Length: 281
Image (spheres, helix red, strand yellow):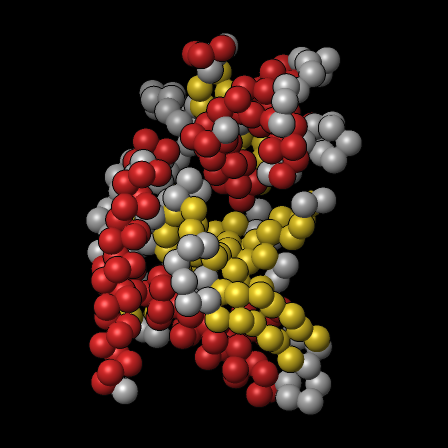
């Protein structure tokens, strides 16, 4: 049974749901504060009309249903997690605290740990090598009965510094296939297009995540916008420890400009490094 967490108003939520909603609301606070404001207002007043494109943004995060309604559990969580009005509106910890505990924001690390070129190489090269090795093993095992076809990505453009900055690495699935890496610089789409037949998602997971020390951080989430997750925290790669995977407080995020600057700087070094590897081969 899932661990239950008690919110400030006494309602109980599964711990995983608290983590997922905290993450979603924190992303809104940083990247779409108007959408967060509109969500809080409609949770406080069901007659409130959501302004502009905020409703579509909220639907994409499954915070608002396709018909524009808000599920009771989302409403309850938001009412516990958002305080203040207008420009004073802010996120707070929605969880009921023990006597003497200080109220603060969603639980996550306030310190962004340094991320070096070695980790960048893991993001851009080593993860893909492990992933495609697992795909090859799977295809060999189901030869004649099914196949998973996934294109390789040899560019760094499918990267977004606005989202999913973390310490260490997380891997997010999309429709049952590993698709994105959460990195210290943001979210990276590490593979190309995908098609398959006769493939069981668990067969790939069993071949991949043991090599990455993968532990589920967030469960699969189904909505009208698609099937997202699970999200796995990655702890090692082929037996080599990775930096401890941690979510970050928004205040610890690199700015969009600085995250892109670091990423592009490492990309230049990575291209040079790859050229040398090809010469040696």
